[in-house]
Amino acid sequence: MCQRLFAESEAASLLTQFPTSEIEALRRPEVSHATLSSLRHPELVKSFLQSSPDWNTVYDWFTSEEFVADVLTTFRSQIKAKYPPIIRTLFSKWIMNPSRYYGEVQFSLRLTGSVLSPHTDNADKVLALIVYFPDVGETSTGGGTSFYLPRSKRSEFAVFNRYKRFGWLIPLGLRRLQSAKLPTVDSFNASQEVGEHLKFFDRHYRRAFDAPYQLGAAGGFIKNQYSWHDLRLDDVAPGMIRSSLLVNVFLRPSRARALVNRIFTRR
Ligand SMILES: [Fe+2]
Image 1 (cartoon, rainbow, N blue to C red):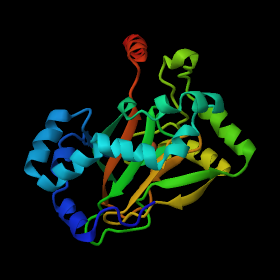
Image 2: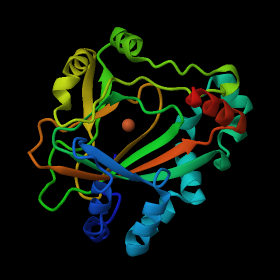
Image 3: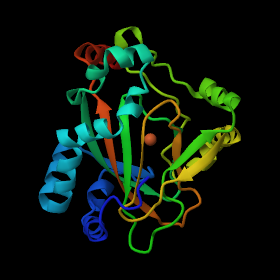
């Protein structure tokens, strides 16, 4: 959690240049959110960055090798904790090798009524950082990502058993390990459509804290099996447009795993 990742003037200038129209052009009218991603829309991102030197600087930093190396150094113990003790001891160098990781940025818009159901994020994700860009006067308590803790050990199992996704892996880490995720829908009244699942989740998990939805503030985490978070824009002011920058650091799939992934997605 960081109240001020960007200085006030810097954040204000980034806000005025936020690519709202570029993201809106990608959003289908019936869908309550859209993102412009450096991985999925490299050409669009490139042409946007040419028009915005400030965002270009931010982009260059978050996708640089230095940033990835910095993340690995800063969160060394949390990243290593994801591996079994024996692996973590024997393969420490390999785990922490920066060339195994890469960064992505996504410009995101979410509108009132949108719900991103609780989930722990993809297993290939190492760092998730969300930087907020509310419009002037739009800072509110709803809008920041919410983070959750289980009410009990039994609660944790109940949710995991209901929502685990089969993406097994393990032998040699060949397949992408997926994580637990509640059903989510893209509509404008998502909380009604997936309400039963949200209720089940809320019975077992309690909201631990919300990231501050303030200009230039950020919330983030190192992904693990406990990193439950969500975003519910069902009770925010009508007409809200939630703008944020998502910064992700991913583990690069090995060549063998990339091949296996391709075979499985082709099916
Ligand atoms: Fe997420």
